[in-house]
Length: 258
Image 1 (cartoon, one colour):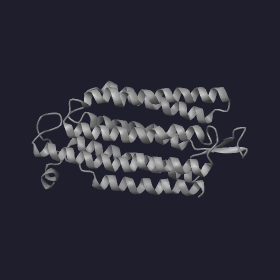
Image 2: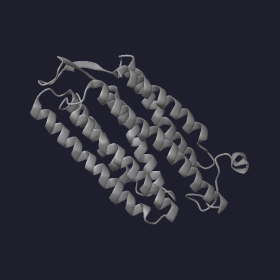
Image 3: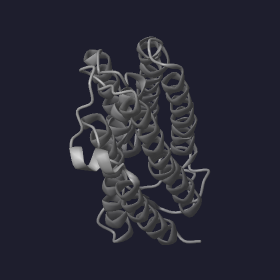
Image 4: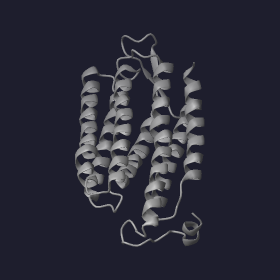
């Protein structure tokens, strides 16, 4: 399968996934509406990125590594633009799950998003670098920022999540582990792909990332949206609002219909 095949698969999958998330997502409370918008925007942004790459507007040609079979390699810069928007949104959605009863430690969320952006920008520079020691220094810095994101998820967010109800704690841990396992594969693919050691072919590298993207943005988005609806069902049934102690639907007639 060619690189173009995987890019068009990514575009089609993200487009369908965005439509599904926005269709099944409910908007009965402000928190639920925000969650639907966050997880709906993620595949929309990714679909734009894949469309740009599939049509040749999201990549440039760079010299290949000394051991590569070709003189040049396609560097897909659009994926880094995509990740700069979508991974902070996914972290924000995960933080909303962790602190379902109300966003409390905004500085922690900001720190995670800041570390995430450092990770992506330094990974971009890693991919662009031609000098070996500079390339691998940037890769190491990117991995360090990645560890900081994991610290924010499994230490700081988990501390806040500990005060939530059992079902919310279970949802957060399930989502955190799911995202973390998927995200852990990205630096491995970059390491062995054309931007790193060049051990993966262009089509295989693009195919793996396309599948990872679809799982992290569409499958996860659908899962998180359904979980949020269940938590809000519980809150509405108990007459609770997430922050004010009473139900405050965005659209009262929608909540009544639900």
